[in-house]
Image (cartoon, rainbow, N blue to C red; front, side, top):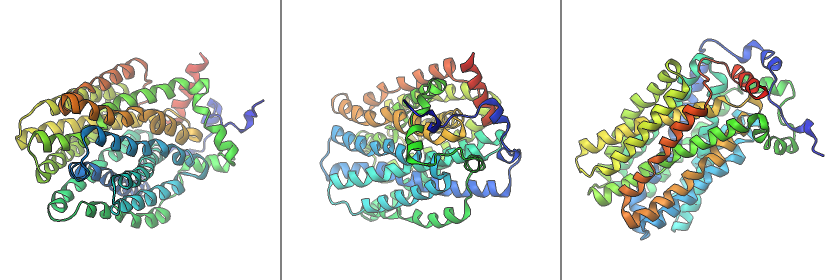
Length: 444
């Protein structure tokens, strides 16, 4: 018979109200602004390292003689690393957010640097696979930390800012590649990925544990053994959490159908079909991310507070479907046209990611937030992120990249429909109020 005492449970309404006042603040403090700066720095390097793969894609594909299907397989294997980040992320519910995010920054920097020394496509794929494990875990933890620490009225802003500021890393990666790839070997890009190692000390010394996690730890409600940890893995599938787990899993998969392959295959499309070289395609992507950073994520945070999470998420999903279809179908080689289309796509992608991440962060109670997030976002929520590149590669060898990607535009349309029909509205509520309302709905 299962010992239910070792399975963590969410706080009942009375417990939620008994949280100390210090667990929910109403105003921003210097520390919270400093915390954002630390997480922003880590996330910028996170997306810088992820984006390197897109900047060197045409070069790696040519060096190793890979067709689109084979390149899609490389992407599939690399993206499986993001799924395995599940095992690192869930440890944050036992050891704390601060310790694990420090580990993730060191891990992704180390394996990104090692990629520079890969002498075969197998080694290249293996090091990128390991790097992606830590990259996915770092970004997820950063969002969780913001969700737990920031005041209610600042929470969507903080999550959107963090999701959007990653665009700076992509911009930096493509602008750096624009210079590096015309003068140096592709390996230089991956050597630059070692820079975040210097952030580890800053995170270790400057970041505190989140107030909500500290409260749980002091009251003995955290996972105190591996048995507790393993038992907690089942919690998101208990009846009371099943609906929200399924919701987050489904919308992430709908989202990834277009956001995951977009830039990786667009650079190849630009090189093969538009006649672009590294200096052109890096400029278009960087320009798109600049607009996305300035408009996409900030607008998402604003709209989530003004018109609600559900409508904002749905609008960005519809926009993502239309923009990705148009980006790949318009064959004009004009840099202005392609930059405008890329900008529209990135604005929608960043907004959709911000809204989806907000739902994933808010719908689980503190003691299982990392575990619930890891199940729904980093494990089951990445199914389409893994298989889509291979599917597009397979289709691209037969019908071309534009039509292959265009088929995937149905994903966000389905996602928007699911959000409007089934997602709860969480705008303006504390994390404890959200848990109390969702638990109350289950009891009814």
